[in-house]
Image (cartoon, rainbow, N blue to C red; front, top):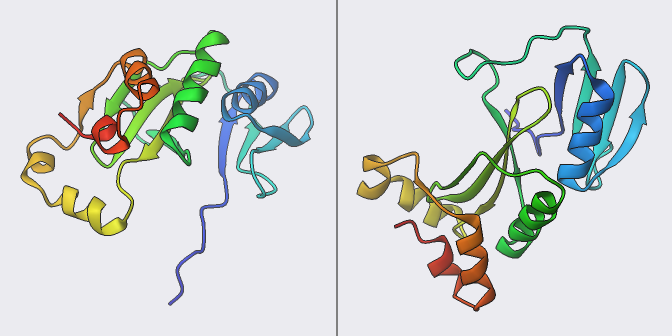
Length: 171
């Protein structure tokens, strides 16, 4: 049996195709591949579309406690890229509602115009083996969610040249 080679895209139902497309293009620094009144595709890399929107006319927003999709996560290449994205979005009036060091990732959570949770993250470990070792650690068993962090404090530490391993170490 073969496994997929990648996750190709996520499709979101919305009553505001244009607003959602604009938000994701801005947050992910992407571009529109196709759009009309009922459908839009956007991408930020070599995939023809990473996020798509289908106009449903429905206006209900997801609630905090609901079944179905919880969040979608996007991984950045480096901590500098993640922090630079945070600074760009903050300057544009978009701030995360939660910043957490999960251990395996450093993550910032945002809400899109429909209230869907979007995670922007970096991997904290260089290898799958290191990540699995952390999953198997007593620290992760005791706290599988993580520890909140202040992005401004993290930026200050990053700018002083503090080593990556120290910046992503979960307290």
